[in-house]
Structures are given as structure tokens and as C-alpha cells.
Amino acid sequence: MKRKPYLLMAAMGLAAACAAPNLGADSARARLGEALHSQKMLVPERPPVIAAILPEDVALAQLTAARIDAERLYRNPLSQWAGVDALPFLTSTDAGRRFLAATPPRALARGAPEESCPALAMASGASGEAAIGRATVVAAALSQCLAQLPPDSAICGCRVVALDSIVTVPRDQIVYATGTSARLRAAALGIDLLLVAEDGPDGETLLRDLSGPVAWLTRGVDNAVTLRLAGGGRVFEGSSIPVGYRRGRLAERIYATDAAGVRMSLLIGFGPDELAQSAGAWLAWPQGG
Image (cartoon, rainbow, N blue to C red; front, side, top):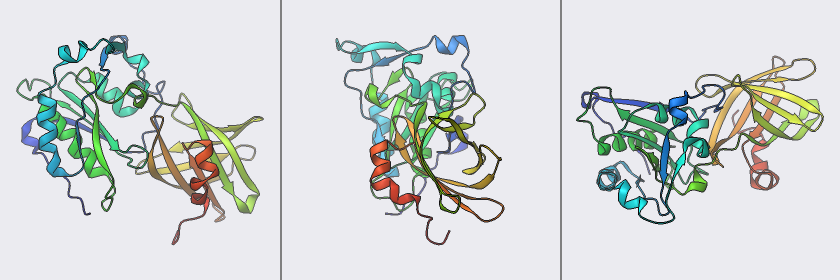
């Protein structure tokens, strides 16, 4: 099923920020000011579903968004207001922080199902554009998100995860894992390791085992990556293929080579069971690579 980006005219006065899937999120890299940390979001017991699978679905999502009443949602005894620090997907991703920094109307949309649909986009009303409403920013966020999805994917859509001051997905879908599993293989060097990947304060990702650092991963533009091995500083250059989100963090396949043409494969963001089973097949170099 071929997708066509659903375009909104710039003349509508939108200030929209589109987050490529290779976020490289780390809360320490772009710390929120105290005023932003003090924000609270309503976490409904039954969050409304604002989603689109195809561009034609965006209009219905706009109607759903326009009808949401935060006061009515809060009447449910299991709904609650939560500080944004308790919602780490918002504070630990670039798009989430932009969402928090924006004034309503604002919307944050993510690929759905998140495990296999790597897309994330944020839109907000431009400063001084009081006429820009909630429905308009929802359309912008969903449209940008849909445009990021694989063009031939028949299973992916996008869902708004946060709207104004309302979380619109279950609370367990707004988590973010700062540390995750990784699998590194460079057969020519005798390397085949199960590691822990941790975000660093400077945007680097540290790959380590029980004995200490094994490598450092740095992200560039357009999914470019650089991996530097500990103990000798051997450097690999390559690219990342985003797969989807696990516990709020992007899971990705990374393939790179060093100056001598030695190949390295890295899987990052997958759970240990997934690495041991289906995801392990992705360690093999892609055909034609």
C-alpha cells in the first residue's frame, strides 16, 4: 500500500517540528528549564484514541481531538495529574522536549504499532497564532508522522501520544529506557557480544559489559553513525536502520565498516529475548550492503 504524504499548507501558520527516528534521546543533553519540569499532564484512565492509518483518516482524528474535554476525563476516579518527570518519554526524547517547550495547542504523534513503525513528530501553534486550534496541530503531527513511515508498509499508522496537557496513550506507553540491551558482532575481529547500551550526557551511547566500556556510538545526520572501539580506538562508519520503539526507546539495526573494510553489525534497543530469537538474524549483513 503506497503512502502519500498528507500535506498542510504553510500558510496555516503552523510551527511544526518533525523528529527523525534517530533521536539519540538523552534528558541530560537538552535539560528542560524548571518551568517546564513543573508542568503537569493529565493521565486518563481510559485515554482517547486519536490515530490515523492513512492520510484520509486524519480528518476523523481531528474531530476526535476537537471533542476531548480534559475536565470530563478527569472525573474518572482513576485518572490523575502527573508531573512530566514521571512521563519520561516526554522529557527524554528530542520531540518530547519540544512538545513540552511549546505552548498549546500542541500535539506529539508516534508510529503505531510502535514496535515496528519508527516515526515521531511534533506540531504546535505558531507564536501569536491564536486562531490555530487543536484539530489543526493534530492534523500536522499525524501527517508528518505518516510521511515518515515506510512507504510500502500496510501495518503502520500513527497515534497521538500527547495533546496539549493530556496523555492520550496508556501510561505504560510513555516510558523511556535509558539503558537497554545491545548485540555487537564483528566476525573478522572475533567480536560477538551481548552488551548494555546507555545514553551519555554528551549524546554518545556507551556500550559496555561487566568489565567496562566496549565501544562508544555517536550519531550524525540522516541516520549516520560512528562507532569507536575501546582499547585501540578502531573506528567504524555506517548507518542506522530504525525498526520501532521498545519501552519508549528506538530499536535499530546498525551496519558499519572501518578503514580496512572490516564489517560490524550492531543491534540496539531490543530486549534480550528478542535478541536471542528473531532479531538475531539481523546481525547478518544486509543483501547488497
